[in-house]
Amino acid sequence: MLTELNEDETDGGPRGLTSVRAPLARLCLATREVTPVSEMIRYVVAPDGAIVPDLARNLPGRGAWVTATRAALDTALKRRAFGRAFRGKGAPKDDLPDLVEARLFADARAALSLVNKAGQLVTGNAKVESALASENVAVLLHAADARPDGVRKLDGAARRAYAARHPDSPVGEESVVAVIDCFSGVELDLALGRSNVVHAALLAHPTTAGLLARCRKLERWRTGTSASAHDRLCQRPERMPGTDTE
Image 1: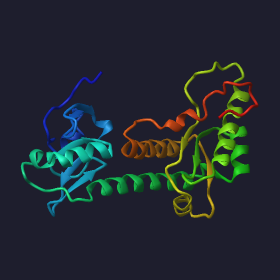
Image 2 (image 1 turned 30 degrees about the horizontal axis):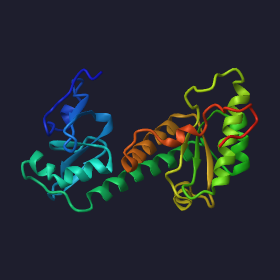
Image 3 (image 1 turned 90 degrees about the horizontal axis):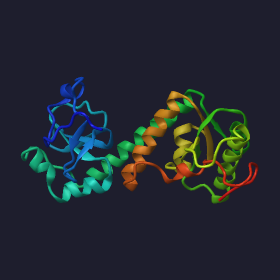
Image 4 (image 1 turned 45 degrees about the vertical axis):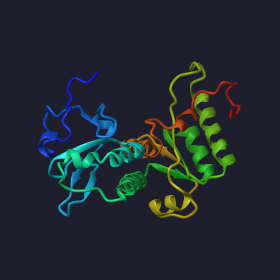
């Protein structure tokens, strides 16, 4: 339950956001609902008068808040909610939704590079399967344009590996390996500095947790849902350990 909230359309600036008494929720300009700030994006008026996203919540000036989905931002723009919130100071450009997505994607790509630099990423189908069987894998990474049969094979390997380690684990518990597929193969190559990356295993590590959080933000922005449907993939198998499931 939220213990503190704020129904003002704008905040008092970064200093108030870092206060121990900073509100845990804000009024969304689009939905007019008080929403946890963890599920929102802050917007400010830049020096040139354009309204820009403040993903880090540290840009100067008063800020207005919108639920962190493209649909919510589109609604706020259609209702001209920023003009009301900022009292006519500043105006959003037509490409504001695309700018938000680009920055969310850049954050996710930068986080992937950090995982790679930390040595917590394994690529190549054979190496990924080996890691699933012997390492503490926290996330499976598939290129968005990966072949479905390759995705199914590794997802099945993840389920079998977990079943082998936890033969007495009941069916229906939360999944233990998340799945990310928001990068194309070309984007993976660029982020990792290597060629033909299609699948990867990410080991449990703080950098991996940071990447997962940023990818979930990107997915939520695009789809409007807070959790990826792909989290189903590595749940306990409903068949006997050692068999694949769809």
